[in-house]
Length: 279
Image 1 (tube, rainbow, N blue to C red):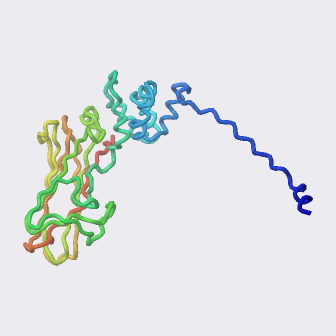
Image 2 (image 1 turned 90 degrees about the vertical axis):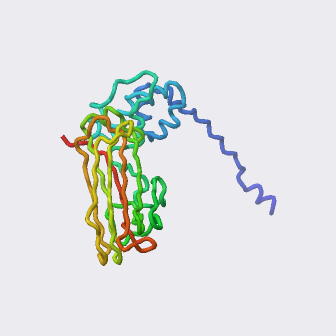
Image 3 (image 1 turned 180 degrees about the vertical axis):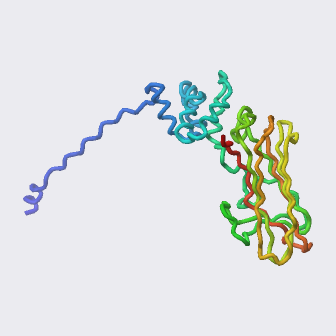
């Protein structure tokens, strides 16, 4: 009976092994087609990896054609501005549009850690009284990436960032074109049981960090028993002088009760945004 059952089983036939597929060699594509394929690769990967594959790929990544293709597809509204400000291509030097596409400096907040979500990182700080600390907002700040804020103390506390506009992906011909504007904004407020004072200073600097233009604000102090009020300060530099290469963003805060601890001005959602000027 056992032998009969064994004879009834179908014999196992080993599955054929799949034939190895021939690897796709992108370098065999015509340059114009390879350009289209590479335009769908993230800019950071293009600059950090694809540029190292071979001389042919390096030439494509370093040239203008690839980045103009990416701009036309992903940032079409910026293409006329970029084309009008492009300097002549220089042999042996990567196209400056690579950094522009990677960093995306137009329309992005260039201030790092604007709400204290990373503690005091990226800020140059001067501690007065008991110094700066980070706390949760007492009032909601619309559009903020984090509902946290920097809180000052009973003596002036100061905090500053200096932004290198070329490092952010802009270039001299674009900065000097008269076709961009720089928009700054800052939120400040108080806690209900303590008044406070606040000051903002934004400076546009040249390559030697000489001041070319500035905006300063020192609003009327907020009084005690204020219902956790907060305000926004804004300014637009619309007629930017030739030579601007840095933006210095600096603000101060303190309380008016002179209490130990952290009862002073609460600052958050600081921003410096470069925008294309509307015709």
